[in-house]
Image (cartoon, rainbow, N blue to C red):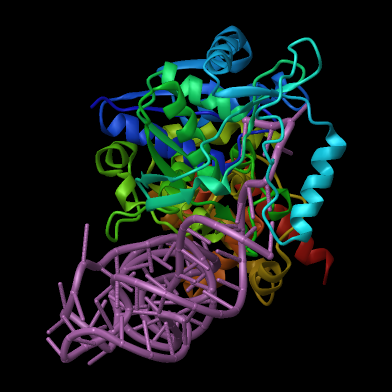
Length: 466
RNA sequence: GUCCCGUUCAUCUAGAGGCCUAGGAUCCCAGCCUUUCACGCUGGUUACAGGGGUUCGACUCCCCUACGGGACGCCA
């Protein structure tokens, strides 16, 4: 059986992490079984769909690297097809026109609720004759007996009695088709074999299956993935902070780190935590997807992002880091080789934004020192130590790591103090207290000119504070 | 309210009746490493929602309760 999956967002906002995970699962499943992955835009709601949202979703998919084999397909371009199907249903008596006024529907709803029942349409127009010329909607004639059973790939068997279902509207009074109809027609027409979607659709599935049956079509397999919850246990939303995929880009996460985090949210392969894209494709399966909803945890995402920062190709990290330095007003071309800086700093940051922040001192003098670090480093004989090491550094024939290291140890020896007495003030003088690697590497990257300038600044500072 | 789905450490999860005095990861804490901060390493605290069954034996199977989520729209 060929596998054909799809991701079918409605363009009413950006691509959020829940949708991204669903897309990832669908994409992985198709890739895993050598199938096809389709992107379909469900834009039948004129009121809420926007082109801006379409672009945002496309942008998110591209950034994550979830490339689709077909699409984006737009439902608004397929209205003729939906009409054709609706006509067919009408002709065969499987759908009917309904002109129940809103007031009647509202009253019915209230009445049922008061009677502690589930609000459902009562089928009032089932046997009426409503003219096509008067305002009306079209409803699907749902079976009244029996039950719908389907075997969810993630949940297992799910059964719902037809008495729980009512006659759903498949065409609005303005003539446009509704979701439950379009999704069935499209999934059928596109040959979708596996419908992978959020579990908020579980309740729609039996209705859709009834539609498939009425149309005489094969029913695809269904897999309903659980929701992602915010840190407080409620459904993930804007008030939980970043939910848009592109916000993660802005905050300095690598797409592969987000993907890795997302794939492990609800899915696992033994104890493995880190998965390359190839490994995900090779190992992913719906059977191993959890049934329970999971909570989004930024701390773990941060850890993963740092892992990717540390183990990715430094040149690639440098490339991605560059714009974040730009945000700080820094042009990485004016200063040490960014790739070298990345290699030196990357295990010290959880995101590109943080990496940029802690690496700024390589490119420009800082305005202030980290208070705690400065207090500790610039006390006692620090001024003399700095003056002594400055002299040696200034006299170096070449600005090489080994020579720099030698100059520092020579100073230590000459002064007859511990290494820290020289190294500490020197480090803080040059970095401002920012996290930094080995001292000689740090100085080498900062460069002789800036190093001496910053030492002088501290010496001056200490002198004037006397 | 009705229906559907779910419930293992704070969080993500392993676990398909004996391998479990419940394993891994993140977080947190302690120690080691160390010229800062990290990384790394070592160790530690913490969980089978509750109650009934079934079974020689239940985290695993069944039922009930509680709690959580979802659906109930001329939204998707």
